[in-house]
Image (tube, rainbow, N blue to C red; front, top):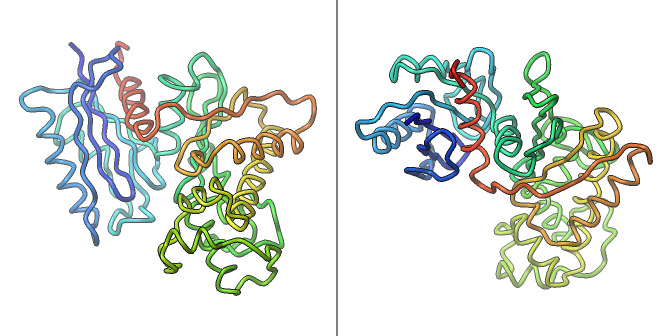
Length: 324
């Protein structure tokens, strides 16, 4: 029996799972929310307790780790976390190898999720795919010729910061009109909030918002991307307009990537992709209009859901075992 330990350091949650190589069912699974005000030390301690709870007396053959932030996959060093303090230049691979005495593979969550979908999900049987996660941010991960492709400095896949509207709103990255600035959940909520508060410089939508206000009891600080999606599905004109713009931005980004790299499949995961058939229709139509007619590709939903990083961690761990 060859055991793999899979770990997921997310921005707000920590998860760990144990699986037999070749199985598609977790032997054991633990998940815990990262506490408010957590730092790298507290997250590491929580993860250690999850690991020892899972392993009992067993020893894994390898450990795979998905981390929600930039990672140097060649050394397994976490560069930083955008959500949790204290992760600057932490040698996570080395720490785990020293403690557990087995090989460890570490990568960022988008690359890992791409690997998970390729090995176990919507990308099975495809040599090239681009995985895109649309949630708190918009990130991407490549599989080319059946292998992860990270780029020269490990930064390949940043579709969230492709500019699709140079005159658009300012993103945290300092550029205007990035895909992430228009399509991520928190930014969709912000766009709705600014329009409802009459702060939007170009208010193109003159109606709608009543459903949205009702969903949050008129407390606009409670708006989320998910609520925008729900209101759009229920017919709120303002929510539909903002969601349409998000789908448009994502479609333009995908169409440009299709022209540049020509992958067989785009696999979309994350919360915003549960936004309903209208969202998918706009993404597919705009991507198709943006790409050259000769460029052939599919856009499909991810199938592993929240477990994509853990299954990707299984895949990267398996790659560190010489006999597999």
